[in-house]
Image (cartoon, rainbow, N blue to C red; front, side, top):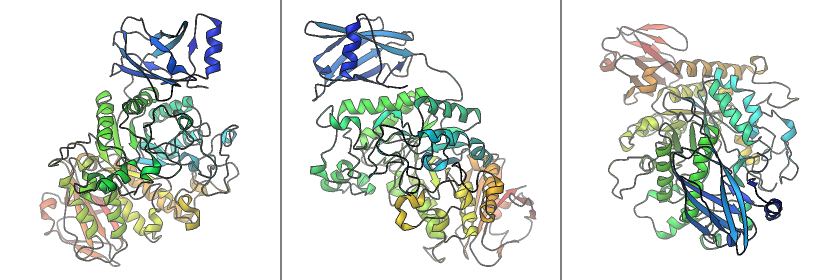
Amino acid sequence: MKHLFTFLLICFSPIVSWAQEQNLRIEPPFWYTKMPTTELQIMLHGKDIGLWRAKVDVPGIRLVQQQVGDSQNYLFIDLSISPEVSDGTFTIELSHQTKTNTLDYELKKRIRATNRNQGFSSADVIYLLMPDRFANGNPNNDTVEGMLEPARRDDPSGRHGGDIQGVLEHLDYIKDLGMTAVWLTPVFENDQTPEYKAYHGYAATDMYKIDRRFGSNEEFVAFVEACHKKGLKVIMDMIHNHIGDQHWWMEDLPFNNWLHDQEVYGNTSYRGSVASDPYASQYDYDKLVKGWFVNEMPDLDQSNEVLSKYLIQNTLWWIEYSGIDGIRMDTYVYPYADYMARWAKEVLSAYPTFNIVGESWVESVAHESYWQKDKPGEEDGYNSFLPSVTDFQIQFAVRDAFNQDFGWTTGLMNIYYALSQDRLYSDPMKNVIFLDNHDIGRIYSTLGENIEHLKMAYAFLMTTRGIPQVYYGTELAFEQGPSAWGDGAKRAEMPGGWLGDERSVFDASGRTSKERQMHEYVKKITNWRKTSKAIHDGKLLHYLPENNVYVYFRYTDKDRVMVIMNMNESAMNISREKHIQMLRGYSSAKEIFSDRSISLLKDFKVPAKTTLIYELR
């Protein structure tokens, strides 16, 4: 789509001229028949369009209401569309004083396919990547005329030119690793100034358009379809807390309360725990919820009902238009909690097979679990309706497990204590677990750039409860860049993703010895995980860490997996008697990486500094 606001004006040639002169924009640009909701809110934006009044005389389509914003350059038309309405176009008549014009609005037929809107679960492994840093499939869109920021590959915080086509060309690499889902950081238009450096995608300037430096709306749809053909799901990153300060709204806000006032509330405190704190002051609450994320990210006020409808409808449009399987919602705890609950409820009511994970970056299990739906025992009665949360507590626990000496509350005990509080979640199996992501330090460097520690942590990620997410480059033991690079230090390019690169990590011949070692390890375990029902659906039983060794089991009625983390510098003995609750009835086990078998009829040893995964027989 060259212009998302284009629509057909008919009847008289002056109408076409009038629409073009007004630079009219319509959102959503089209809708669908037989949607799960009968409601449709159409936003018209153009000079003095708020002076006009709409009329619809179409069987099955009812004009519910129309609203003018505080700016008379907006007209919001609320319609109710019966499920009996057929696809095609219908006419909206617009009148002002003695003038009358008409516009045609398109209703498309919904695409029905079993591989659309699938959701994601603990049977999946999510591969998170930043399109700008993964691969440059189309150098012609690196710098786009008319857009504010050009490509600057020599700047760690500038645009490097990666795009959707680049990811598309390397889907086989992702699939070969054993990944089953791809999460792209936001691909919406981020037409921000060069000083802000919005390559990351979290400062939207048009929520109905893919950034042209990444590709087009059509290319994104083709990408989703290509992923589905290869058995890969697609998770789209969205942000309802804020927009970019170059968003087209900023020159002409629809309502005065479309945004929170930065002069009143300043910038956010980033203290997500305040949102679920029963003793929080109004000052702290307002600072979190109403403060701007940064100066370049105006904070949206979802208490405005028209904005709330706009955001929810935008979500439904992308799900239906693209066929995506899930959403990761950025800064989930920063907007109004009631709005986020409404959004999640309406989206999942419309698409029951879909899934959503909300970014809940907070400091404790209690604060984390608050944001998962159906949490028992909440005195305030809040239900988020959110199935999945980003389990930062597991990431914190792994970080500390490898960077502290073993003690009563330190080292491996961090993992035990985090998991032992799972009763606070309504369903911890739906938590998205991870070692690192685009906002925190590279896990390899966090673990002291010790390849054995990285392997141990990765094996834990693949075998504990929850839905694992792997940050691109972890399979190659990517290191943290210099601190002077800022966030760019966490977001390195994939060598070989750009023409002229000296080597390509997408091919085994282009990897260093360390990269080959880690890549083979990740590929082996991740592909094995795809076959393990005990890991996908099984319960978790673990033993208190002892002598710096942590043992746990994943099991169903038919399948049983034993995992042993030995953090010691020497081999350790594993007692059959201690673990007899889970070993009774089993005589042997096969270690999944080496394929070596051991006897379970007696004690056995495990080597130093390793996480071993055994299938019991």
